[in-house]
Amino acid sequence: MAHQKKDGKLLFVVISVVIALAAIIALRFYTSNVTPRLSVPARKMPSPNAYDYSVAASKAIVDANSISNAAYENPKGKQTLTEWKQILDDNAEAFKTLRKGFSFEYRQPMQTWTVGTWPPFPKFRNMGRLLKLDGRLKAALGDWKGSMDSYLDVVEFSIDIHKGGNDFSLLVGTSIRSLVAQDIWDSAKKLNRAEAKAAARRLEKLMAGKPDFTEVLENCSLSTQVEMMPILESSDWRKYVPMIALNDRTDWKDRARLLTCTKSQVLNNYKNFMDQYIDSVSKGSYTAHIKVTPNYPYGKEMVDLYDRIWFDYTYKTEARNALLLVSLALQAYHSDHGNYPSRLQDLVPAYLSTIPKDPFNTKRPLIYKKTAKGYLLYSVGPDGVDNGGNPVCDSRYKMPQDRYLIHQDSKGDMVAGINR
Image (cartoon, rainbow, N blue to C red; front, side, top):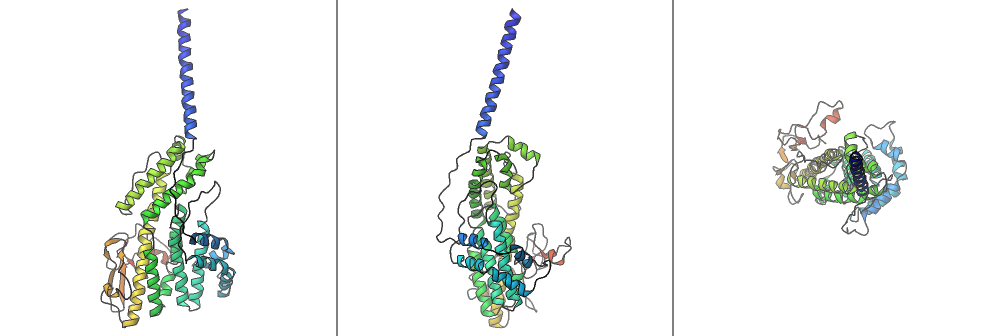
């Protein structure tokens, strides 16, 4: 009898433990699938909004494959100028729409993208390629001012895309600026005094309107949180969380960590991660890395992604623009005076409002040296060392033109007209 009572108590304990565990699992399942609430501050939108014109222009593009082929440096099956003109004529409506939008302020609205749909930014690349093709055709016909205008349209478009955007817009905006990294220099050298001076003024204005990277990241963080909501509302939300990191890999460690996360944890950990990263950007340099929030899957991938974008946006692209800006001003100065100035400060205020700082060393301006054949203008580059104007030339790359590209680990200076 005593044994029966003991066995009964043991059975009761076991059943109680099982019920408790089941309750805990059920509660965990419930809480992990409760969609969190997100408070989104109102975003004042311009009206008209250049963003709407950009979207409409990208939708109006005809024959994107031909545009892409023609815009590449070494297209498959080289096209004739007549074929280029036909492509541009076919896309006259897209041009008209986009350039009309340049008259207005650009601001991306807060939007949610349902699972399986994509934002319009990848299509913006085609618009950038179309502008580049327009510039290349005008250059081939000797219309250097028209060519420069089209290339500066590319610069303006790339800057606009970053205003209020998300991860996609960050990637697309920087890639669009790279489309004309070399072409814009070829046209700049052919401009006369008035054209060079006008181009410098326009570029200077565009650079002044470029948002700070911390502002871009803050908008990106909020936009991404908004875009996360329809993902978290879906029944198989864990499947789509890697989209937030623009990652389609199925790393088992990240998948396992994701299984332990609730929806609220994913949202809050992403926000905390972005807050840490933005703080790192505001205080450090692009070489600084932060400790990724442990419970945020794919956090490392996002750090790597943002580090690359940080480098491109704040350093390489800014250096490109600064070197081009000063070169245009020097060209106009030379046309007026028959020689180059002894120092860059002589360009102010007739040709430039101010001399831009070196993005890779903001404590000093770009380095300028007047030479017997002209001038040498350069940035100290990613390594931060003044190499006397010796350009980055990376022998690891087989193609000669690729050796002068600027990367995070490049050694040497970023020289005007050589590196890109």
